[in-house]
Image 1 (cartoon, protein in one colour):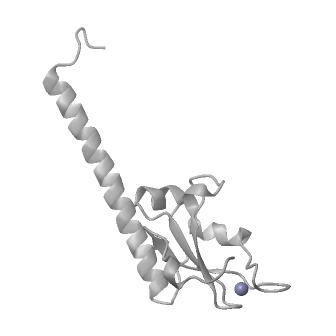
Image 2 (cartoon, rainbow, N blue to C red; image 1 turned 90 degrees about the vertical axis):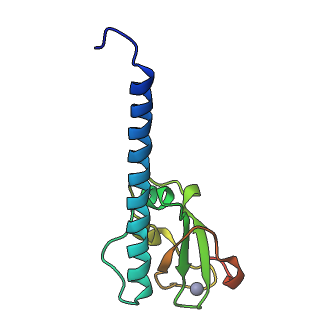
Amino acid sequence: MPDHDPTRTDRAAAFMRKAAAEKAAHDEAVDFVERYNAALASGHGTPWSPTIRTAIMAGVPWLDVHCPGCGTSRAIDIRKIDRHPLATVGSLVLGLRCSMCPGSAPMPVIRGLHAFPPAARYTSTL
Ligand SMILES: [Zn+2]
């Protein structure tokens, strides 16, 4: 334990280290989500998905979900979902069912994560 308060230089260095670590974490989250969105866009799907915390850290909290049964889609704000932040966004589809499809609705399909809800092309709810 230091015998004195940190100097102004020490405080500035600590601030800069913290800011650099936060930027690195943000950049890593953005890269991870970009790879996830690219994998989904390729049409081959992906066996992995980012966590809710990663998506929020990357600034893309809107989950684009599509119903293959009726062809409708919806953007879901994952910041408002009551799930553990380390749960993956892929696991969220297990709790979703389309309200437009009668009876046994098919499993929704995730189309990607976005910074803003692409509301213009959405006509229904899940
Ligand atoms: Zn549907």
